[in-house]
Image (cartoon, rainbow over all chains, first blue to last red; front, side, top):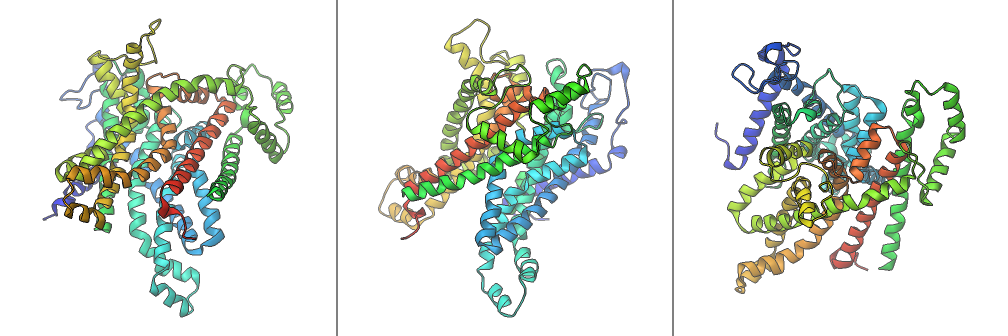
Length: 268
Length: 315
């Protein structure tokens, strides 16, 4: 299959993501050890042929834990991004189409949300609410819709000015019909780019929250909270922090490369 | 002109009000409210909590509490820290210089990197491809992980720099301060520089594609002259805007970086306050952060309006 040189990076990123998601979905089948399996003879061991990423203080295989952690981190990132997409498209679509004071009020609210530093806000929310994974998804989703809303609003405004929209209005189509059947579908590409980037941002946010202990709570493992637990032993067992963090980095990198390539397809 | 300034300032105030409502609602959404810290303490009796509640006015209706808090806040009365009883304003103010030192240094470094990378990427295709990989890597880096890795590598393994803190015990030399500053500043700067490089490069490319650049080239102007004198000048204003608008990222990034490197700034104060459920400090931090972002946005808008005639509506 021939892919244009321009998009080779994005294709590689997509492949990596697919592999990662498959690993996460089939985690119990793929991992060499169980998630909770203790290997007390090999505690605090560095990477070896037996334990590819080493073990933690209880002898649990790190590679296994990282793959299981992928489930949580990816799930939170992807689902929260979907949520952000829905909220963002609704608000952005309304603001862009309705115009005037509706636009004003909605954009004022969006700007207000953007003014509050996101991570500190979520950290407080996390500390206050002691979140489970579903609650975390909602929180991250509620913190990520603003960029999508802005992008969708801009697109909707330019789509609204096009002839076929005026024609639909002249033919008597009601605004809801116009928005849902004509305008919003054309805003999908922009929303998709924003959503792809939102996945990466969501994963980073969740990791940061878990890193401070206000995100995913043990015993559930996410990449972020593995780093949280690895903090105290960074000097003696660095692999415990290096590998989960590397996975965060690579995953977010792939989503960003993908999003970047998607946005380039639109502008070319 | 002045009218525009006044109008923008007037637009910022409702924004800050909305922000204050959001922050207030968040704190009071805690199960147990602002006094939840005491609820967890077995030594505190329910009667004491009730007494505290009445004393602090927490049994009044919420809107009334909100207005009282807001009114006190704008007058500079930010309450007292739950952790050590000192005025919140003092606790925040004494930490600000350290954060300014860190964020200021990293911003300075990031601007320089962004200028170099952005201009070169717009000028040379080859460098563009390579640098854009680095840029996307930069914006994907988890700050806390990058900080930990740098600590491991440069402080623990190689021993070139100290791993935490702002200065060594007792030492007051400039060299010592710089050594402590380098790692955290690099961590912060990498995140900032990545986004800014990309933006400047896009901006410059846009300007370079315009007709006037082609005519300058046709007139025989040298490459660098076009790049610096024409393209950069036009791209500078959006660049400065973006730098100012990224203020809220700096606030978040500072929290993480200061935590990893035990830097004694407001970010570190925030994490401490979070652990202790010190809500008065947390609220003040969020409000100040939001105000800073809003003010910077305002400044950026006014600057653009003032400096770029195209943004002013035709009369």
